[in-house]
Length: 97
Image 1 (tube, helix red, strand yellow):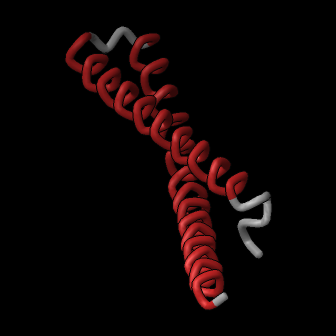
Image 2: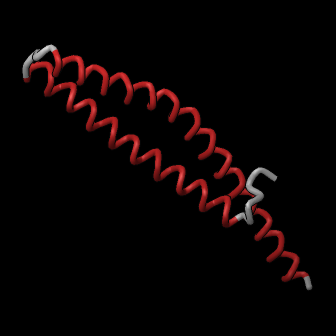
């Protein structure tokens, strides 16, 4: 009986750690995703303007580098969102409880 209680306590501690991880991941995602969206939009706008003004490769190449780096960050953010959803599913959809 005491061993069962210890196991339940351990499971409870583990679930609480999962809830905390989910809360942190969700907060990090929201805190980083909004500024990232602004950066992506402005980088794409700068690329379009530079291309339409025919500013040349010395301007376009660095802007393309920035755009590629931001796309990579966007992929990482998407992965972070997937991890958060998986944690929520693992917690039975009650991650904030």
